Length: 370
Image (cartoon, rainbow, N blue to C red):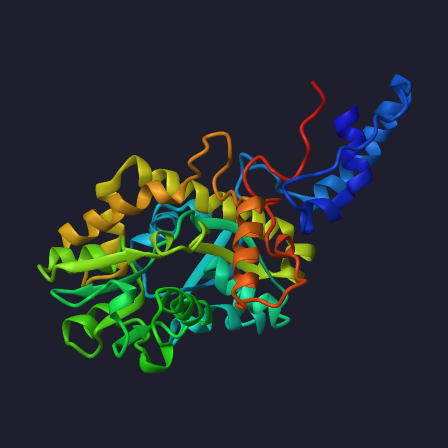
């Protein structure tokens, strides 16, 4: 009965609202008779059915459309999403999902903020910066659980931050990349006024191999790093977690707060289908690599398999007790404090309002008392 009382007190707003993973415990309700309990159960049946879809049913729900903007053109980081599209996981969840990519990596969050898309794949630091500027956006699941962003160069080019004074460095034009780069270089004693930063959009590899820049910041060690290695370009890579940046969720699924509060079933169905696609990919990396190649035909077979194999472990929490998509509030708090100390974020904001684990598999409703 305790679980029933909890559901009644929280109502549908809890199932579809923004609720942190750490929840306060509700006092034990007073005992009730069996007849009263049955009446309470019947009274709750209709409202809870309206909330809907906390768990998968045996039938396919009514189809709904959902759009998602990728951070970059399809690659191994999107293998769970691509597999869920290919194997029918989204269709089984009653979702007709469309994907798109903006003109530059910085377009993903604005597309959701403006209502042009339901979801975006973006970065935890980028989301914190957007929220500090007033955007009502929330991360609803982690897609890649560890940092990928790297300082990268090819051949004999320097990747040591101390040797980059006077260098030309390409970034993807994201606010957090420029801010992190400036912090890393400054901490290494570099006069950043003597560093030329260029927005290379999605073209990290081309910018390096064609000598348009001396190095890049924003390329991923598991994508461009492997692509360049497979092409014999001898990449030199310094991931941000080895350059003093605390751990964070590199890629997260982002929605508007309005969507999270008023359309929880859509969010839950999307995340659960994404989980199924990710688990299917993990069970058969070669098939997953073939799916990535279909979405990115210019990617070679060996390159696709190598990037997928490097990426699959990053899609799941290292703590097996946590559900797919889990975001650690403590880690977001630590990242925010680090960014505030370095004037990358304004002080006073609460980073925990930027995420919710409410819609992850098995989350959202407290377990019954043992």
